[in-house]
Length: 377
View 1 (cartoon, rainbow, N blue to C red):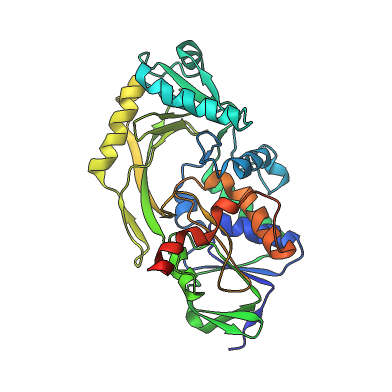
View 2 (view 1 turned 180 degrees about the vertical axis):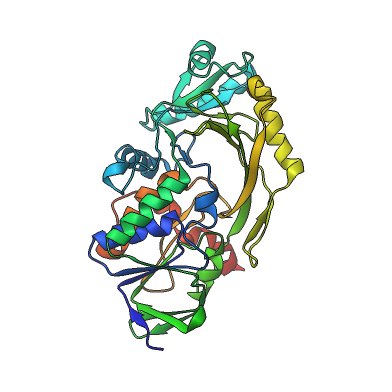
């Protein structure tokens, strides 16, 4: 079967793949997105959709701040508001002895010239989150952070991609990649072939295996973060709340459900593309939620789930060109905090493909940093 020709083949139909495709299509490139399952099947559809600059790794802060500016005008970037609300994100210190770490973080950020992270005392914390247990001491806050709706976000990015001329092909798992002259020939199941000089690897938890097909042996793990959603409640809180020393992220969605996460891990089978909830571990999140928010002690859990995603050794993503394969660009390894970065990562990939470089600060995201140990062995 003759290959279908494009300018760019994006492998992976999660939000980062869609964002890259959207920016590239708007820059005049003919783009195809290949997704083994369906758009948003794994991490992008299972995320709590936090839109957070708070507590970012220092390597991520510049692009995260740009991404936040983009989120505040997201309706002008994609077809929909993505359910985004900027009610703040708060990192709570339950006890006085936990405050020094937050104070040190705030001081570090100030010394680097960043002003978005702010220390608040017990009184302000209680004013902002009256449902929070009264024993909590203080917090670190970014008032312009917030959260979005993952399904509205996926739908908005997909609609925008299709409107920009992106071809999205689901049920198309990559089986073989070959170099043909100046192009990469990608063969999928069902004898479907696609040819393009540029490939974007946005394959999430499977991105390490894909990278190896291009000669990039990038160290990559995976995680299966678990979430709880409750029955609908009357308004309880607006900010997203996390807690020092607890595996807890706590927010209320627009329809009233509480969404409770925080990084507790289930298990996953990458080959079968399945993830599994560990209810013993999940109970720790429920206990933390009731300790911090006593009013939810008798609230019923409606559902729980786990979503597979890539995890790097340093928990910082891989975003940049392949050191071994011309025309190949990586965007993966977001380690549980990639949702907020979606708009800017697409712009970065577009810069790299179209301009051959970017002015954005991505030196900390180079794939080589996760390859050295294997190359030296």
